[in-house]
Image (cartoon, rainbow, N blue to C red; front, side, top):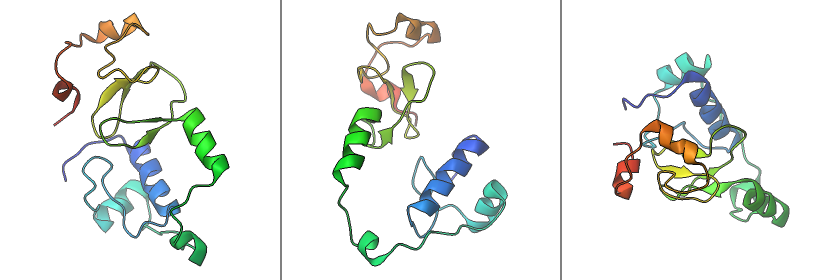
Length: 134
């Protein structure tokens, strides 16, 4: 695909896919498989998925501690359902899927009173479709 992303973000994305045991790396935006030559160019080596143990491969269950941590430290993107953890910076978040929202209150496009600083971006408050990058 022709989606653009910064190299450090792509490296982290691909490494997380390896760790999860995924068989092939995918684009974080459209989920199409990334060509092996492109993977080598991005991370400097071939993709090496971690082999899952028998109990991991068959388990969709999240333990209680992990679920508690996810609920306390992440929020769900309303555009694609991915979990997002904010480490620092502005509360106006743009997910890899292109959906923009306020991390603090989940308002689409950051249309909220949590941080009036969002206005400096010149965002027009319209329909939700405006906050999805095509």
